[in-house]
Amino acid sequence: MTRTVIAQPLTAEAFAPFGDVLGVSGSPDKIINAGRCGRFHDRARLDFGPEGRAGISIFESKAVAFPVEVDLVERHPEGSQAFVSMTGHHFLVVAAPDEGGRPGTPQAFVAAVGQGINFHRGTWHGVLTPLHEPGLFAVIDRIGETPNLEEYRFETPYRVEPGPDVVEAGLIEAS
Ligand SMILES: NC(=O)N[C@@H](O)C(=O)O
Ligand code: NI
Image (tube, rainbow, N blue to C red; front, side):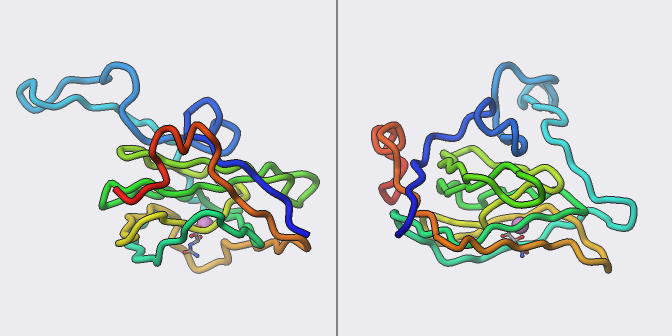
């Protein structure tokens, strides 16, 4: 028996318990480059712990299609982790609250073109899940020698389906 989770469009408000949405929202904090560029300054809470450092890695991942089965989530107790699409395609983001050291019911979001995410340190999340190929992402997270990964496998997998708003926004068709 699987349990269903309905994916919704990613918004900063809905994602706030889990991390930051990277994107242009509101007015730029600064106008730079001879007035040609708006800088949306310092929009994510990055954290790499006392023994780590910031790193940028490139992920080239296969894509998946709805319905997406989620049988495992993970968290990084020592650092935040950001996913930034390098192709502009939208992707699936899964996160779950912590309930006494275990993940609660996951929530699912679809990041639209122009949106990235940054999971705050210790947030339960599904691994990088592109919905289109090439699944090319820059991932900003902690580089360090000490462990930074805790995994949790659900006894009963979750089945993520696109919600009506996601379908209406055209976030499931190949772009
Ligand atoms: N393992 C790894 O580098 N990536 C995962 O943390 C992930 O969330 O995709
Ligand atoms: Ni991760």
